[in-house]
Amino acid sequence: MRFIHTADWHLGRYFHGMHLTEDQADLIEHQLLPLIAEEKAEAVVIAGDIYDRGVPPVEAVELFDEFLARMKERQVKVLFVAGNHDSEGRLDFASRLMQDAGIFARGRLRRPLTPVVLEDEYGPLAFALYPYMDPQTVRAAFPEEAENGLDFETAHEVAIAAGVAALPKGVRSVAVAHAFLAGGLSSESERPLSVGGSSSVSSALFRPFCYTALGHLHNPQRAGADIIRYSGSLMKYSFDEAEQQKGVLSVEIDAAGRAKHTFLPLTPRHDVRRIRGTFAAIRDQREQYPASDDYMEVELLDTGIILDVFNKLKAIYPNLMHICYPELQREGTMRQQQGQQVLKMTEGDLFAQYYEDMTGTAIAPEQRALVTSCLQEIYQEERER
Ligand SMILES: [Mn+2]
Image 1: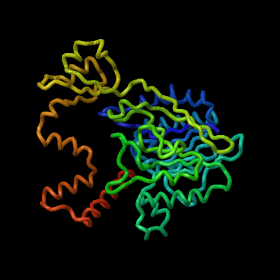
Image 2: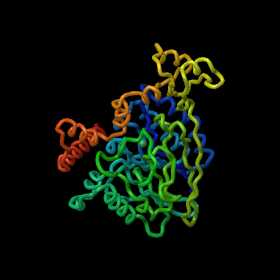
Image 3: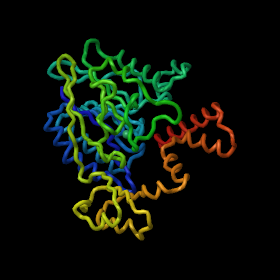
Image 4: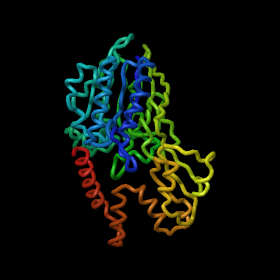
């Protein structure tokens, strides 16, 4: 069977004050749909983060609805799971009804972890669908494990083993999951999975499968083995992804269960790009800095103030999103450098830092644990709101 592995669509994404839904619709219509047809793919697997947030904008829901209808028309199966940005409960809506149309959704982790079994020319091929799992969701589905103080690694061990046990014997199988595998390369647009402690899981957990289709990391990459892979996100969702090539994987599973993959690039109508130079150079050197309607971040090398520089640059780059001043930051105070570091800290670390600044003593481990559990609750509420 040949299927398309994709992930992290983040439909309805809001990027520096712009809704990307139209760009996403354009990319799906003019690139992804033709590619699915050319590949003669029998299924499309989306490994989580369908939407950018639990309650996505109407346009994003309509776009996904349209995609599903088009797949049904062409008799291409769709299998998708919830990512950490999706609302698990909402993604399950109508999932029992959609199965008959060849559309298989897994929002919430539920038992039994019955796989979806599709047929190809060689026989059955089972797909174990794992929605985003944190220790809390796994404890809810496996209350008998509640005593065992699950972390991300052991929670995945429990759930993945249950999915493996539910596979029909001797049948080729594919896992679909949304997780952070140890050693993975991350980008700025991924929301960290854990407030405190490690959220990574070992790729060895997926060894029983012929292929593992992963979501979460936005940079396409392998994860511990050639047959355990991240397809990467549909589009670039932060400027630190400017150099990444986005696309989907076309995966072929043969009679013996061997998986072969090909990366197929996607090119959106607006690229996400970073340029650097002085204002005068950018204004005057059109060969070096051609005008463009790409989504731009400009690193201005000037050290003086330029009045109304944003609007002046917008005349060349109508979709200018952001300006930064690396030269000013380098010469700036400690506070500015700290500012850069603060952006990379988790809320848990920020609170610990604040506590120390205010009281003069480091936060105690039990206090830290309390903050962590409060933050987890808030995140859980946000996903479900
Ligand atoms: Mn994502």
